[in-house]
Length: 306
Figure (tube, rainbow, N blue to C red):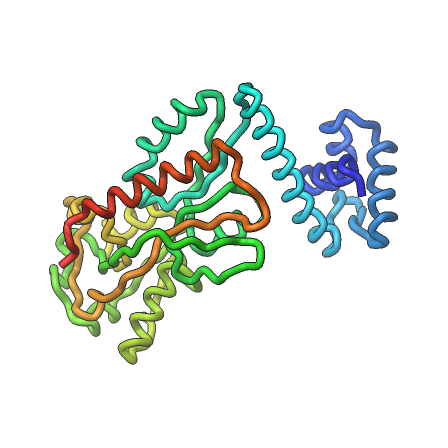
């Protein structure tokens, strides 16, 4: 297998056809087709199904593409690291960061990072338990900082716990349950979570129910971003979980903490996900260290959660 063949497979997968892929790669269609046939010959497997609707990857093609994109990312790392060592700082760092944590520390981390690496661009996406493990494993992001609840170890991903965070029930300001409620009252409400079926907040809710012999709430909605989740909860009677990283903002006028005795012990770890089989570039490693430093500093200065 050769690199130009793998890049041809990637282009066809992204663009859906030979013609568009050839145009992007500045190749003739016969040249691109030849590269793909040579790749199929090297693997001994059919990698593409070609039809009127375009080209679709087979299962073998999809698996090879996943591995190929890791190779592309590693080459990008190598090029970026060599440029940085030569004093020619160019490249990009991609990270997934917990939205709640990002609101607290991202701007500070960026300022330090930008002073050190002014010519390195930064890409930040929201980190959620369900999606971040895959994003790290296949090289779409350099690392992720996320709630580790429901994260199961993968062969090529290192899980590094950083700190524990207490969680509380969150509802809209003026919620009918008031500022204190029983577990039965809390679980009789409909809920909204960033993960409604597995991992992350869902695992917190499932553990709370299992530990107390209670069934899950009848209806659990899903909002795939923290912003949408808060918007949904703040205007309805839905409940959710909130990490107590900045309690003042949770009692902000739009939302309020609803204390529940059984939830007081609900503490979970935040931490790092990174690939086990590759090194972070100097820029990515510096950003990771700064995010960790700021996170631990913030947690150390938080008042005790009652």
